[in-house]
Length: 345
Image (tube, rainbow, N blue to C red; front, side, top):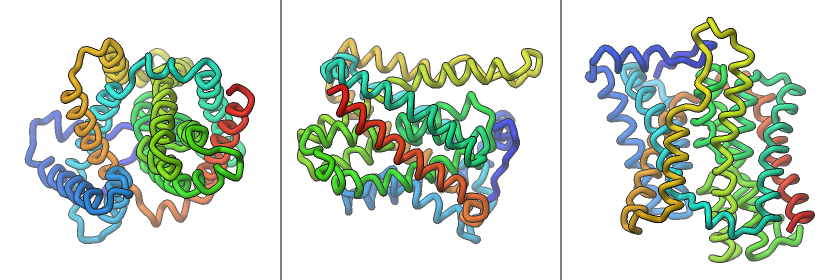
């Protein structure tokens, strides 16, 4: 499957296919995404321990690196990936109710804020030391410090990067988040974290929401509940983080260049609107359950598409520094979370 890259992060094939009203160009790729999501959910039903989102990424990587996949699927996959990711980020806001986060207490909330801020800035510093491109460093820093692929999707629209940087960042989130599922319940008790305490550490240090749940599960239902709320408190910081990076990018881009990013992308505002809607508690439980399933569907389709953009040969050739950045960032997030929890809770 062919991919298109440019230095500004635009995807000309996506816009042109949609803008000229030629849906037939999109159908092969859309059909491929539907098949990928269906397979991911079927595998998840058969093996519930495997997240549908993780399965979707792996399937995408496999499909994207098979020689027999026709180039005609490229436009549809790219078109679906961007829209599904942004739709999924918007609906993710319905999982966040501000009162639930406030119940964590001032110490835990402050620990979350410090962990996100230090991890983000620290990862950017590590990226410079390792000579990782700025765009990729920002995406890795966002995904690892906040909420994985969803955060990467929100940030990719405001930072200058290559299209391959998005796929690489998602691949790193999948790799190291999956390793964390094993590491957190293994090392947590050694570090004094058990029960809800292990849930707090998992929620503050593991990348994806589904990975957080899997990492906290061995410690019991209370740990999973705590881990989920702590993790979602990190997600709340997504909008201000995107806005801050956008302001920095705009300052570095001439006003007459025509390529300045928006202050806050429209779908991030949609995310905040959904948070507000959930906070006022006007939606019935049935609607929230449907929205949760739809969120997973949208993100699974987007992650399948991002997986299709990963080229293993290219990743192996250019990836050692990116792999090191992912490793060091994972250790940084886990270490800062450990220290802030010990000091503030």
